[in-house]
Amino acid sequence: MQTLEVIDMDNQREREAGLRRIALIDYSLHIAGPILSMGILSVIALIMNYIKRDDAQGTIYASHMNWMIRTFWWTLFWIIVLAIPFALLTVISFGLLSWLFVLPVIWYLYRMIKGLLRLNEGRAMPE
Image (cartoon, rainbow, N blue to C red; front, side, top):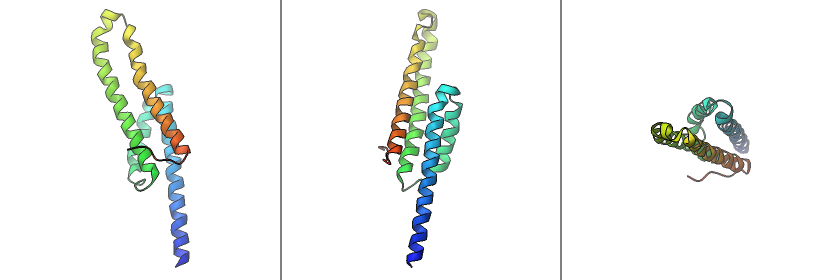
């Protein structure tokens, strides 16, 4: 009976180690996305988040997957919201409002870096 418990513990450790690697890769892609690829890497990371979210249930990694998913969608929402007045006011402001698009990206990077640091500490993200 004790052998079965040891095998189960080993399987759990392997599962959590794999989820940790996936979370690290996801955070890296999310952080690199707006900097290196205009968001394409973030979309790849988002797909990975959705694929692995169910596997992560019951671990701290589920909170990280949800954190990354929510951050991505809220950032996209704010970029779209800012695009409307930007499009209307571009002619009037001669493009001076274009710096507003930096704000959601800074917020996005802040949340991804915060999540990465908490992952490194082995802590869950707030729901």
